[in-house]
Length: 226
Image (tube, rainbow, N blue to C red; front, side):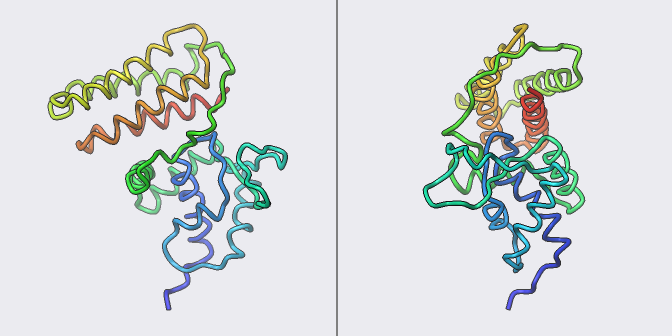
């Protein structure tokens, strides 16, 4: 029989797998059991809800309203959670402590499923928010997007392919949205985020992959501040 993993290991891993399952996205709500299904090893079913509630109390996960039907199926009463910005930061730290790469796991899961792990059926429109160009989150995002485009354009293998060129242009087009004084957060979510994830899929260079992952992380944190 497969060895039972320890409860502390399960608790630490659940948040990481939750972040992986939602693709680091703050808009996608899933069941804690969906995240637990990604954990290798045997564990007690009762641990899932206990750990999810603890993560909620630590403000690393947040439950959605029981009246929010956008995510629910008929007859399904299991609690749905969203990842919080602090939850993403903690998941990244925990994955590093476990010797794992959170963004590489997200990429692997997307490749296995043949689809994005983030929500594609529900991306909120708006709100339109003013951009504070002195805010650290915006400065971090601007720097990471700029670095992504620069490193991508210098990658001969990527730029020699029409598909690679197209992906870089999509990121450049999405970056234009950040040049306005105000932005539609939903529009940025629907354009720039898929552009970055699409670029990540066609890149083979690990250094460039790391740069793109940092840009995705910065964008998700920026979108969450609204």
